[in-house]
Image (cartoon, rainbow, N blue to C red; front, side, top):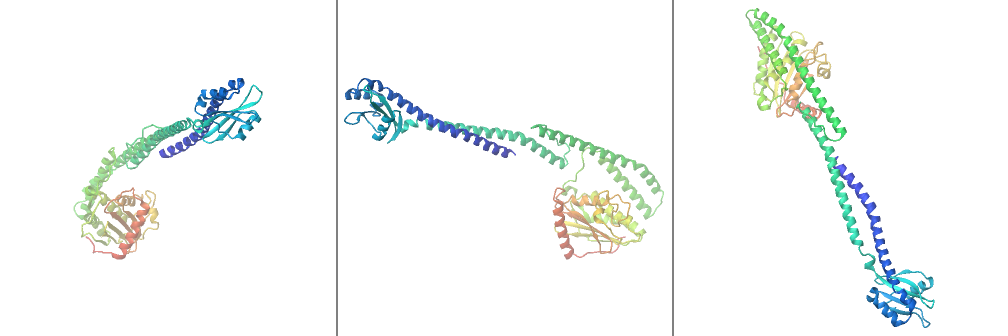
Length: 475
């Protein structure tokens, strides 16, 4: 916008300067010529009184030489005589031009070598007409024109430069607030909720800044309300959790009882974490991969061990493969564990008792792929299942009654590393949830659509060259 304003102002000012400077330059040249010929007429008039008194050649010669143009050889008198025209002084005009002026009786200008000749008719005492010739050099006709044109050009250039400077300052006044608005919008999009825009610039941009600041304040308030609501709802869970913990303590000894008490303890820990996080004023962001990373194989072994008791009670065959090799991923351990628990919990909730399931880990050059498969009925509408809070079907089984948040948790974990989440058919006959975890990050600002196509092509190539590996039941 800034350079556009400068260009427009430059073009308009240049056209105005040309429109005024060119006619003015022509007028100056005409005025210089009129001034030169007016001086010549005045000089010709000085010899008129002498011609009215005498026509003596010697007297007229002295009179001619006594004048300033006559002394320079620029004045001549053409007298009519019975013997023919008599020329006194240095004449340059052609005889035909002199005779034409004598007959016409009015002054005329004729072009001669080196300039122009003013021919002025003057009446003699005898009643005849003499012609006084004054030579006007070409330099005198254009005297001062070049200087005037240079001054006009300088004024025009100064006007153009001044207009460009004014347009640039005006452009800065308009562009700078727009840049501040764009920068604040980018900062707000990156999660910097304190980003605000100074209310400056033109009226429209000030109004936009006021609207943006109001919107940012509203976003902060909405986030604060959401955190308070999450904290309040989580706090309400403590009462039923206390009852559940007391009931679990009375179950006695045994693997199932210990597993139940461990689940209650973990649930209490998660609720406390939600409350602490929601009460914080600043949103929690995932740290750098080097700080928030974990071993995906270790987390999968731990969580599969946690779910193995329930799988044994329900008669489900459970297989895990690819966890013997370390697989470092840029995901915090609690987040990866929560994502796995969401998928495995969906298997138990939404597939019939006795349905087998498996977890496979595969290593790619730039990613770690986790496959959670089951032998259930599958998901009829994968796109609806990936819709946050509106799927009606969640997890591997696809049963009605889900909040639709489980797969969203997994998807956000994958996309935080530049990966994605896919739903397909497994070799067991049911649903396969494929989690692509990028090892080099990328964040949500990457092009999701283009990235998804690249991921799909990479997964397809990997599936063709890397067959599924499985292991026996984990108990």
